[in-house]
Image 1 (cartoon, protein in one colour):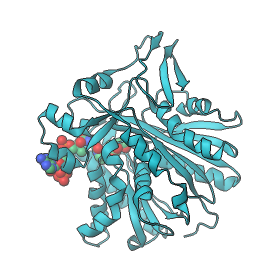
Image 2: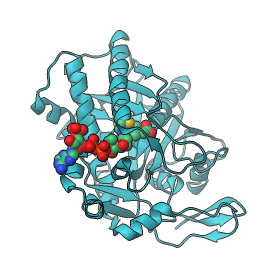
Image 3: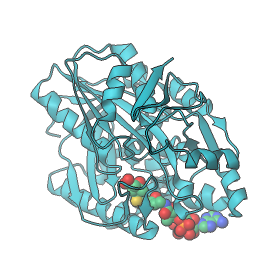
Image 4: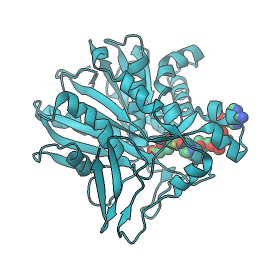
Length: 391
Ligand code: HMG
């Protein structure tokens, strides 16, 4: 598929939060039938950040095992993708670079376009590696998704970070050309700088996502991409896991395939297993879908996987990856399960308090309670500066 020099994902690792809120607890509080959450939107629980966790602590925790395994040789660029940025100027990636002890001969940048930012980072990383094949790029996609309490979006919150090492001769997935891309100026979901919680028009956002699926697929086929039947599985952006099903059915219909539910289950089933207990992790979501697929599928060697990345506003990209022989020896399945299973359930009152937690705007000295037990924590604020600690 026009990809002479194999470039792609050499390693992939994710981290999530200290706490988890089961949807049964939310349903009990709201008086909602839990079937709406479990079946209607396809979510069972959501990751909840402790007061001393954020996109930096999760991003560093996701990337640390990659640096442990491969060292930092050859990493000359760190691209940090997020839409829950902690600073308007400084890249969150610089804190991660510092916490991981990466060399000063590195460029670090933060990227934003809603949930699409992780894919922008991956594609830009591939461009950098193509220019200098000796280089490896560390991509970190990290987000905490926050909606208003008691709003329809609340049940789709979540938080996680995915780190990917991008380079030549990748051990996991070779990313192919072409890509199909699509942009439309829509106000389906956005977060003005003065707000912590996103604003969203739920039904419009679903329609905008489906339009972007059509648009990016159209461009993908016009660019000479694979036929639909060639794919073993599809990793969609999953704001809630039911959205992947809506999107895939839409694509099948659009391509005149009709909707065979066995086929839909086969194409998507394994990809939702992490997102349905983590919730929307925005930029990380589509790569959590990939992690779930690789960790659980029998053997995907040589098979093509389709990726549909969507970011509200909106930008989408459809592209393909081929799973590399021997990939199973490089997976982190046990660590991924542990990251999910180690989370401590919180009650509704505690969850609400964490949701409302923020630093005082005066930027004065502020210590955060030591709640998290991960490798990195946000110790507090001093003179408007965030202070991070490694354990
Ligand atoms: P809502 O309006 O409360 O829910 O919020 P609903 O009434 O539409 O119900 C949802 C589904 O549950 C429906 O199924 C109901 O029938 C079903 P559907 O018609 O969709 O197939 N249902 C039940 N099923 C079983 N048992 C029951 C039951 N009751 C109802 N008892 C909404 C839903 C998604 C709108 C809301 O959660 C929301 O606003 N979420 C945030 C926005 C969002 O996630 N949009 C997705 C597309 S945009 C995107 O992906 C980008 C994003 O990630 C941001 C970024 O790019 O940065 C969000």
